[in-house]
Image 1: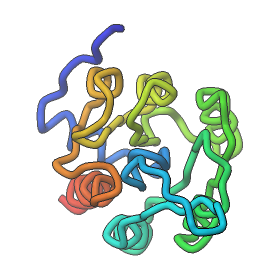
Image 2: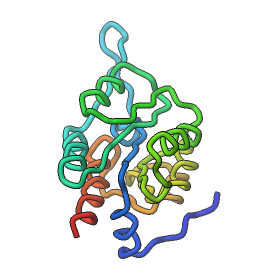
Image 3: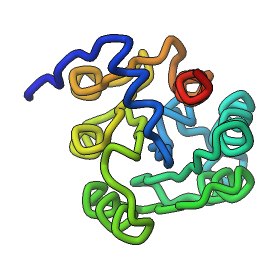
Image 4: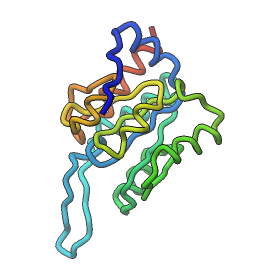
Amino acid sequence: MEKRKKLSKSELIKRAKKIKLLLTDCDGVLTDNGVYYGKDGEELKRFSIRDGMGVKRLINLVNVETGIISGENTAPVKARAKKLEMKEIHLGIKDKPKTLAEIMKKRKLKAEEIAFIGDDTIDVEVMKTVGLAACPIDATKFALKVADYVTENRGGFGAFRDFAEFIIEAKLK
């Protein structure tokens, strides 16, 4: 797999300033990548409240909207995306690059105006396409190779918030 060119801090900031939409994967980014089951077999997931605050801060402070492109289509993921009032909710997606292209066309956005945070092989092509790509520190080696920005926090433990704050700080400079 081809490694993405490592960007300088100033280039990362320059790219972050252009972002209008931050898209995220769910499992391994918004969650700890674990699956929990309730006593009746229902699927449960653990989300970070910090990440949710990152979504709110992006829209309130720098007018960056958020969305999710996830291979999963479960009730907990749907509920979390709706609660956070994400503008783009795409669940059960097997072809993430195609979904990204549809979002770009619908919103009339260029690749450099979109950021994406993912953690696994299914996210790599989207990460290579967008203007700014990130992954949690505990992502797979495939995502780590193509990420422009690697968060200090693990998936489900503030990774999204870390990336969101980087974008916010860059846009406020």
